[in-house]
Image 1 (spheres, rainbow, N blue to C red):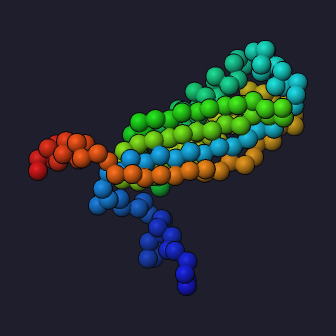
Image 2: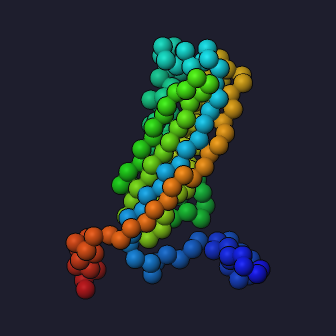
Length: 167
């Protein structure tokens, strides 16, 4: 394998596995992802005037993205179930479509990049679903992780956790 990193979701026998993060300390984790959807100008006008038959497109996509981020472990088999402290979807319309950004945050032993990516993707697919009757040329693209951070949890939280464990 040379300088390549070992795939952490594959055990020594080549079988899929969930990574054991139980020995890792709690950290504040944050991830930001974004994606785009190309829409016809007429579709954007219908969205702006709230005239899409299925309802308010961006409001529905926002809720769908948040809900999806919270359900990531149910969708991606080897993801850990994380208690999200934040799942936020921002949608900004442009001249030729919309950009969706998802920010996910937690205090956990593993990162939240999959939650951010799933939130963005489902929000984009919701826009697609709601507009497919009027726009046959939509393109979902450029779904990507923009940022992933990890920082030490405050000592107060750590002491609280130790008390709960009976230390």
